[in-house]
Length: 248
Length: 370
Image (cartoon, rainbow over all chains, first blue to last red; front, side):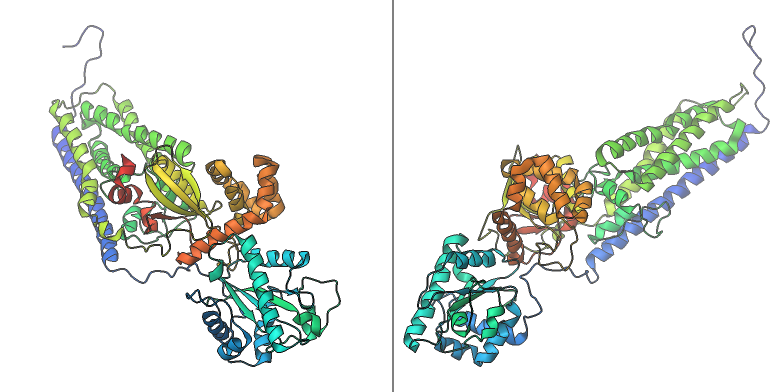
């Protein structure tokens, strides 16, 4: 029965139930197959990851943060510096602070010329702080130069101060004078650096006029008195200062 | 597949492909961002990485695919109720896709290729499912009882769950690996201090090494904020710019300009977080400016933060501060990479700062998630 005016419902297609059932089964089979494919894939992916987790291959190497190490850090250079460092004040023992000429000669086990040659690559990194004759006071230029060099630390761990005295005067006096010059530099650095660990960073050497005197060639290095006359006497009334970019 | 591959805690390319196993594609980073986001998986606190929601879609599509086969074969012999059922459930993936699309656009700012593939598939499925109703012409069709749609719905629910349940049951236990990525040799800076960022509900001290021009750091920062855990952290921030201008550990700049931007962050004073977040927000522009030269970058800093902050950036004291941060990294021999996160002195593995973030926190700092 249909309501008045309505289209009569056509009969269902012959054999519809059978085909519909077959389509239903095929559809259900499709669901199962797709689900099985998805599930097996998931299981395989996870198992594979688990296997790699338990038996990891070699991991890619990652750079490790460290102090700077530049080309001039030759094994010979590092060997000498290490000996000097451990013997001249950066050791844990607070009773020793710095190295006097005899110590340097002994610990460095190196000739004067070779000692100076080692520091040649530091020409750009370091500077020569100049003093008046017989004096250890830092002038304004020296202070500025010292601060400039100290605050350009970059990746270096150690700061070297190598104080000298010129040939005029006797050996004992020059030894004491170069010691006072080294201390003068250290004192000033301590006052500006605000670094509680400064003692672990600064290596002090004072050579008097006994060891590794500088030649006039060093007047061409950055000095705290760039506009003043420089000769072999003047360049040795000095303290050479530099950060050293070597892993020691 | 990309998701499961990362369960080995390794670093992998993201394939971002419609074809499993296909080579990685250029659109991978958008897929990685989606994968690492808090919206990609469920139960991420109780299971490393959680259960990817795509697995639920996989099961649902398997059912809907099979059901479509049935309707196509049965044609006019299919009961009306089956067509109505298919139209009803066939639009649900589209609705879910719309939600995910909105999240992608508004929260992630990326549209990943495979996600777009799913959105389009969902749209086509919805169109196909609804258009099936237009084939009804008043012809006589077999009638089925109301239990059939209920059974189909149950089957849909079951198939939707199966891949996810299988995944959840088979994922490896990652807990033994959480604490195996090293530790700091000197947890305290001997000279200088890290920057401080106190979350509004800070409860967990954490040390972060970050580079303000590092995209991974930005993504990590956004993830912490999106996860709602940033405010729970009491952060010691150490700047570790991957820029050889100040960082001697690199031969060439990975992020040119990062030293200058790091100094801007150091000069932030009580606005450290704002300056850092500005750097992250403007990272694309600042990176371009960094490549153009220091002066372009300095101009950008001046324009946003003013002359005083720029003066501070140019001050030698700020160079020294940044140098102290870098020396803290080298004193500790940490990997030259960013970001890095430390809980106490223990380094959090990189993989636990992205996919495994919530799981790691639930294991190592559960109070952060409360």
